[in-house]
Length: 496
Image (cartoon, rainbow, N blue to C red):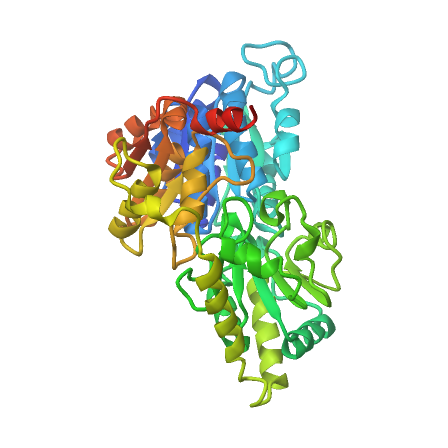
């Protein structure tokens, strides 16, 4: 069947289950927009700014577990996308980024909004902030280039990919039948069996083991399996700030968040020097999680690290057992091996639950808990957090924008489900939450979606609330208005 390359792009999105594409059209990307009108399975959402479109695609991807898609014209449209794309790159969020390009017959000759080396080279521009950036130079390679880009986006450590689409390539006709997406995916069911057995033995023999869960566990769908493993061994569990909610924070074994604005309980337990075996799943052990790489977090005997990216192994802490691969696959296999090594005597580890409870009673789970009940005027942010905690349904998704809003949510709120709170911890881009919540709600179905942001973030991307209104996307926006950049003000005050 003959169709245009722009229609082929839409058919790929449809085959992957991607129902929305976010962007702003312009001269060189108009054929792609026309293709969205012909394809009723993929709906275009026109943002108010290209950065907002990229953030929306990010939010959509995080909620669905699939990739998001965004588009812009060449020149300024492409440059406006960059912060949103870079944010996705730092948070390992898969996005297909499509930008227009002048026709191949005038490419490199200085045409209007030429995005070659004669203008702003969009392919080179996106290379540092994507896993792959290229231009489709032949209509006959369009399907192949799309397959390669999407395979790259969804394989290993996920992330955005960029394709530049010359205008005449978009309108060119090609023969096209169907998209077999599963045939172009790399299988994730692999692991080192010997190392898995070693890890299971270390966990069973440990006297004071603990687990640290990162966002990689959430994206792989490993959280239920991790909970079963933790309960099997009575492992105390902390999460990274970005993975907050990956383990139920009201669970007797929950330590809360370790790191930036984290729980005194997690910090006290894991920095006590008593942990002999630490199982790290899907976390990179970066500065925010480890409080600037505190050496006291290193276990005395064995650090077991499960991560999809081999480059993370041993990067910041000595790692005795490095398990490279998909978190869910490896955790399931570790649990299987643990069961084979357990004895009835070893399964009686109630003292670990008791130790967590005693430390919780001693140090608490947050600072200044009295502020949660404060009746002072103006309202204290902690009181607002408490009201949100009591009001939000358990299945709600909370997008948190950058600034003190993130600090208060991470420190004071409690979540029981993975993916219940979404934050841009990789690059901490202000204005993210306002836009990402719009894309996230389109993916969330009947689940309520709320965005918490400060007035600084609202002033950056608040116009995307109009996008939500124009498209009947029901998001609740809570704006904390202190009439200043509060976090910057606090930093200046404390540094005096």
